[in-house]
Image (tube, rainbow, N blue to C red; front, side):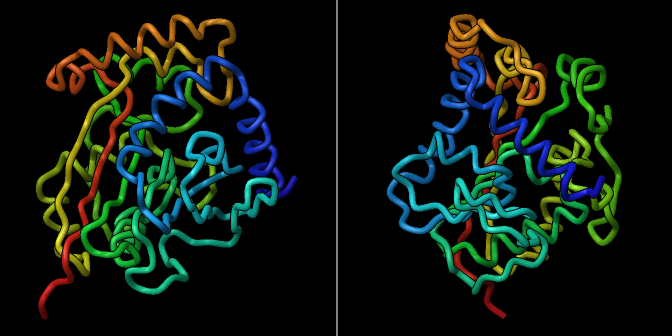
Length: 257
């Protein structure tokens, strides 16, 4: 079976499972965070759209959805390499990617490309897995992707994962954004000035859904209760226990050369 066919079947399964009520409840919460940052923007780019699940939760926004494979039902444009975006500078008023960055072999290239095509005074929004003392054993046992415990040591000019769509490491986002040296390096590589804002999420609610691959049915009331509970938790505690990291890159004016 070809790699593209396997990936297509994986996306079909995810799209089908995204209709399950427990997933719907959690995703409404998750995408509401994305929506709150993008509301009012005229032209938005999504990286790693998969089967276009975001179309269910970001209605009313003008989104150009992209991925390696096209998905006609949700207008996902295929053949788009996040590390070499085929768009002009400042082409979009906002950019987001949900669970995409940790699948990209050279994440810094993808990030600098997102920053390049994002117009100044707008934002690049990333939702990624986060490895904490609580989430590590769950990811390690139940998730098919690699889960590193300690922050990865790496160079931006070397691949962090393989080039297959389903390869990844849950620890990639925090290895970049919780490392001051890597943040400074990203600033140096970027064509524009940037700021970085981080929020930690979901120690329990995300795992209670079972995830898109093997969702747990019939727990939508529990998911709602957990989300409300977690929204009251302080960030210092969520940093120790969370399972998701929400990163907002503020894109400022181009650098003066």
